[in-house]
Length: 334
Image 1 (cartoon, rainbow, N blue to C red):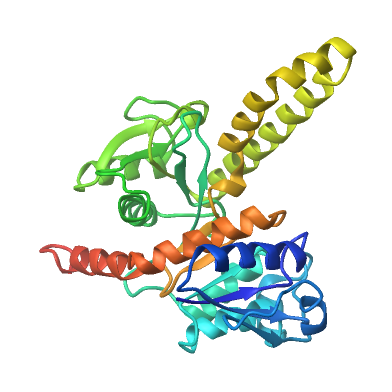
Image 2: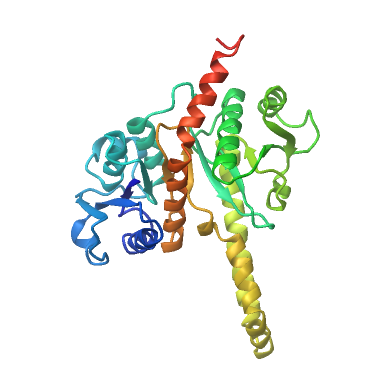
């Protein structure tokens, strides 16, 4: 597999990106990587490897750049070049931890949507208390959505969880303000009715408070609601770990107790750590386009690479295209 990576994207680039790449190269013998970015900066950290190529770029899309303007004007940026590599057929997938809006725009404008997909969805795996995680679609690709968009999200999410996470008949939940049928706004009411008519394993409405308990394997919502949920979960987790650290170091007695409980706390952190779950896939495009978290460390980059590789190996894009095509061809859908 050939992978194109924006080496300059993210808070800890390029060091963390390269460390994650090198871990992936040690893990996967079939992986080849092209790194895009400032070659002099990249070569400070990278070890010579025949499976790694470096392509110099002299532009960087920053976190403050306007997404559409940046993609159109900075065509020699590390991010746009990585996505273009996929479009030109020289790479099978791309990864960036940079500006989310710009990366989504580049994926959409350069790689393009699968025929029949109305809107792509930005879709991260999020942790659950049981450790299995759940897929949330959409977390910001489309702030306004139609019922048909969410039904397509459910289809794409179901395929991903079945083929990549090995879950038979993934449970599909609709994010809502209550569990009862008939709750919510016009959007969720229409989506509920339409999901009931599909062959998906739709389990009904799920509330935000039940997400970490594993109420569903796939949760669909509009991008505005999804982004609020994503940021709330991330913020709560960071705050809880900060409070625990503060309390456990507040006295000698607490420090001694913390020393005894350290292995248990480490397990909890690993279970709730986003870096273990990979990046957010931009589902609905013609190739795997993975957005790693902006603050990704080496493990976060490695997990994103693992996700991109699995999506490619399991032909997730082709399976989504086939499913959407078959839905369009059904009587009454033409």
